[in-house]
Length: 404
Image 1: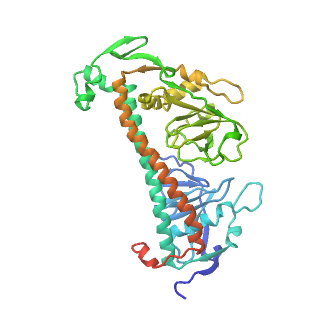
Image 2: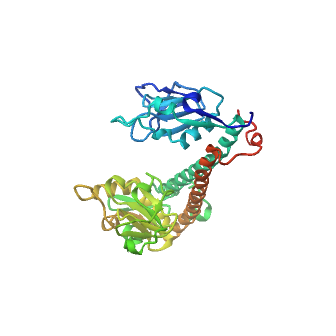
Image 3: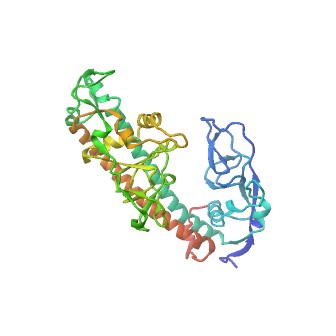
């Protein structure tokens, strides 16, 4: 009957088509995404399949599931999915994720997902209007999460650009020294000098001075034993920290920790101190504990927060930490080494203005992180209930209006 779910199998509903070898997928002028077993890996100028489409990893320890709304290319370590019946592609993507087809293993020495192992598995298929409604609900959550992530990337980019312009390239000072408008509000522009003075190997803005990170920042070193850690407390390890982004959106719980950790507070800076992870610098969005492979950094005076964060997250600082790391098996830096980092210290009034801007950015970044986590939790709750049919959508036609 119309509107009823039907019992089927994956083999009756889809065909898994092999991707193709591609010599080069780093064509920066290419319009079409190239997918491998674990997600996007580059671009090319000719697609293999039309979008929307679903990609399923075929080989490797982790075989991901990806959705592409546009035409795409798949290399030979992955499949692309071709429906045999009337299936909504975005619903299909969520169904494949729910049924964990990327974890189906044929038992061979090299982890692989075979078509025969997938095709034999059972599948309950909702009617088309239910498929489209499910896809729209879950897709809207994913879209909002992605929007928050992109907003954070934009905010970070603005903060980095402003920091480099004021405190590394000294653009406002150069502009005033040449008699040009620095492009800042009059009161703010007046805080920057209009000349440079000789100091060591380079000229610095007049009235500014040489200093070190240790003069304006500190490592609180709040070590705590596992017996005194709340099991429900947020826990951050190096694996939770993203690369080259202060938006630290992942953390676990402190249950079952067996060794000492460092305490940190919301708004403090976390720096991965092992050489492979110097590029992991995050802004703590919560109070919690972290791995002792992470250093906690905070300004001695809150007015220096943005200035400290800008330096610690900079490529120049990461290069400095890398050059001074010691140890043979796993080179690492120390706070004592970090504190010796030399920088040009501006007057407090200039730093205060930058900090006011950055405070707006960081509050928005942290708010976006918490909202995205809430949405992700809702998504995680709804996905199995919707795909299994435990939760049915009434009047699905209203949800799916306009979808094809």
